[in-house]
Length: 107
Image (cartoon, rainbow, N blue to C red; front, top):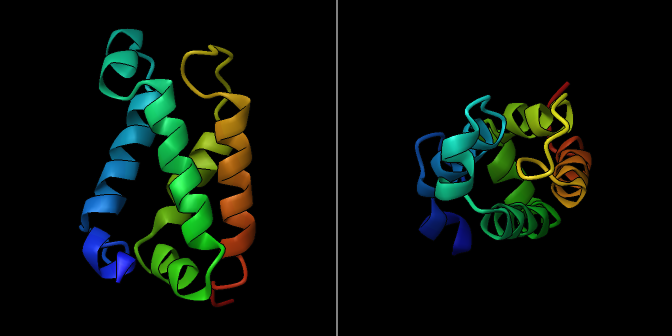
């Protein structure tokens, strides 16, 4: 039910679009818009939600099918050092989500 309501199984669903927008904003070089559109507590809560969603088989499959892996890897590999953009906890959540999602990808 959560997958259907959030549109997590669709590339253009509410949750995938929100997550991609958040990641693009956080990894943007423009510091003036990142904090106002996606404050760190919101971004952390969003990644935490994805983490819990990915820990279930149906949620993991939905996140793989909507193409979430690429954006999460962008957060993990972000070279920036600004603490106001990507925190260690957000990197942790993204790495754990990718860990879960590797079991649902087709080789």
